[in-house]
View 1 (cartoon, rainbow, N blue to C red):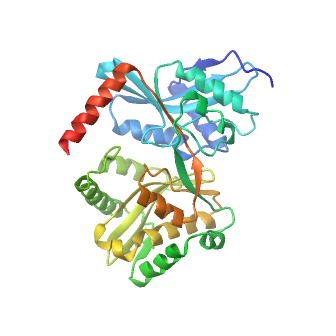
View 2: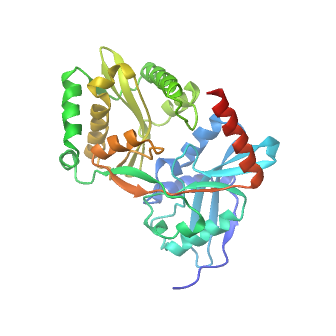
View 3: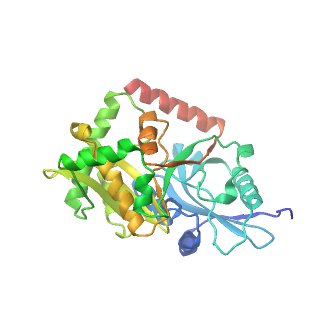
Length: 337
């Protein structure tokens, strides 16, 4: 196999926005989280962050792109880059017509790791990255996905009996699935999310971050073909909901929240069933339930949906100074609980 060498990294600036978007549209493995839309959404709501896309060019003419955000801490003393923020997929994307090998991916990651603090979550849909990143310090993790190539009937037959039973139970209880496009409906979903936050805090569950109503409004303002809020309602009230992102042939169930008052009538089963059926009808390949943060109950629920586990390792390369700052932040959070 030819040796890949002479890697050249170019910093991303605003003039390359269209190039980033074009590659994300062309890449067979790109998800919404690899797009400049996601990076811009995040940075608009988080201070001291900017979208950035590294381009790695090899001497054989192959180019890889690593979408990311760059975050400054302590007045710029610490700089950290994430691909991508919010625990979402990162990793390289590239034009589907380019002959990329696993060695390109490995050498590309090595080149970037020489450039400071990084958090990178693997893209499970890029087959070139398989079996090459464990040597670079990636920690094992996984996502749970549903292959929806074969339509809704095939999906339903692959689910657990408990899921099908609970879909029927939710319907008989009067719950109805919906994808309402009115902002008032999104705002009502946000109120359910706030209830969920209170419930998680009472149970002392650590959460990555708290999303503001303004952040949800920016998502709402995206092109409708890129996002959808799925909810199940009863008597005009939202029992549970998920925000899904749509890109190429991939659907990602990114954010979910539910009202504890309705848990007994199983709203989440009907909710996911409706969202997956929509993905099947519209010829998507994957319905991605996203990583579960190690919560066994969530993992088990997704397993009942007939999901398959796909590896999605995480690399967290950080300096001693950044490690110390994060330790202080975590201690402060635990004290506040």
